[in-house]
Image (cartoon, rainbow, N blue to C red; front, side, top):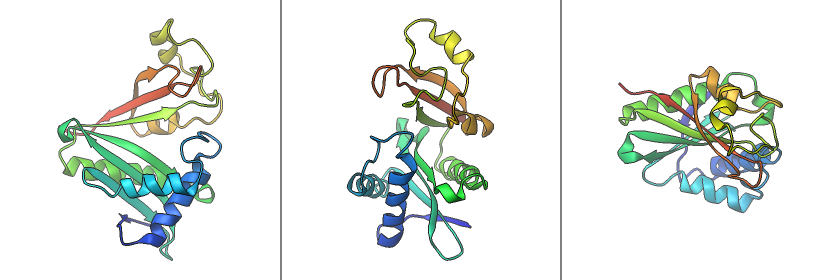
Length: 184
């Protein structure tokens, strides 16, 4: 596996990445990229100025994972958005390698912090399907993973939960904000 920049002229990789988005988010966030058109729009937007778009490819040059980033707060913060690993490649350290590569790229660009949102649309955490307008701090402190929600993956990489937006995706479907300090 190698990680490379996704380039506008590589339509084959762009289409492979878009297909991964549709498939990868179909279960956890079905409204995120429900079809190829919306996924292609997202991937092409990742190629604009102020963005970062990196793709992991296998030995044959086929896309197996993708990560995007958006420059924010004058470059002090980069939002990791989105990331997807092809289902048949999950659990092999590819996601970790992509995040570590992303971290190095944004540090080179002067970042101090990486921010991400990881939605809970399916009640995969103890923050889903509850009223988060009461005792939010306690609920964040006591969060539990009820169904393979990715927040624990990011915690293993040094990210911390820094906030929650209740009902971001509808009633009882919060967005969990995570961040990591990367700069000096």
